[in-house]
Image (cartoon, rainbow, N blue to C red; front, side, top):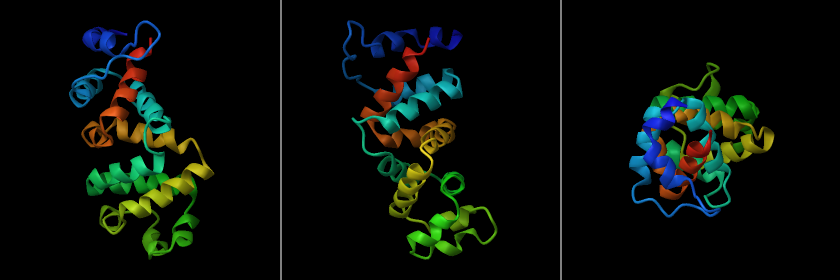
Length: 169
C-alpha cells in the first residue's frame, strides 16, 4: 500500500505494538487529516465504522446526531436520504414532529434537511440501525468523503478510526 509509506510515522504511533494500544496521540485531528489525504476512501470508511461501533465511543445515533449538527445543508440532506433509504420512509411518520411531510418529492432537499434537528436524526438513526445494521457502513462511506465534518466526533473516536485504518495491511 503506497499510501501507508506516506504516513509511516503515524503507522508506528497508532500500531499499538507490544500487544497493547498505542499511547494517546497528541493530535488525532491533525493525524486524521493527514491519513484521509493519503488513504483510500474504503480504508477511511472502515475506520469510521469501527469508531461508530466501538464500545469506547458514544452510541452510533448519538455520534451521528453530532455529525449532523456539524454538517452543511447538502451533507445533512445526503445523510437523511441514506438513513431514510435504509429505514424506509415510514420512519418519518412514526417519529412525529412534522417529519412525515419531509419526503414530498421523494428525496430530502438541503432546505428540508435544515428543518430537522439533531435529536430527530438521533431517532431516525436508531431506527435505521435496528432495521438495517449495515447503515453504519453506509454512513461511514458517506462521511469518509467529508473529513472536516468527521473531526467533530472527538479525539477518542478519531484515534479508534486511525488505529483501524493504519493497521490494515
